[in-house]
Amino acid sequence: MDVPYDLTSYIRVLKLASTPSWEEFSQIAKIAGAGIALVGLLGFIIFAVMTFVPGSKPV
Image (cartoon, rainbow, N blue to C red; front, side, top):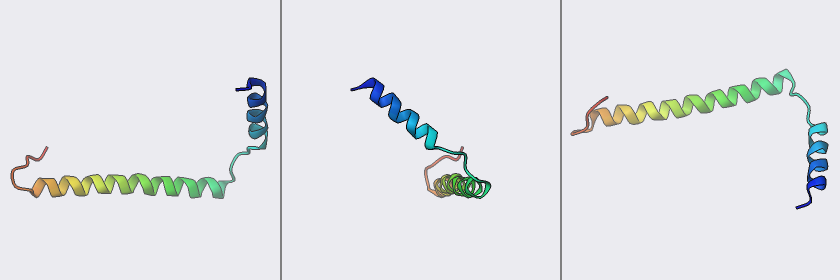
């Protein structure tokens, strides 16, 4: 592991990086929000199914 080489490659990547445009940020935010909503919906569906399963106790 060559530390100076690693640091220079990291610095090179950071110099190439730029802040996203508003459109790109908005698209990423929409996709992330949709993923969070999908996971929440899946959890709610599992909760609803487990509520109606005989022998289970709802929270």
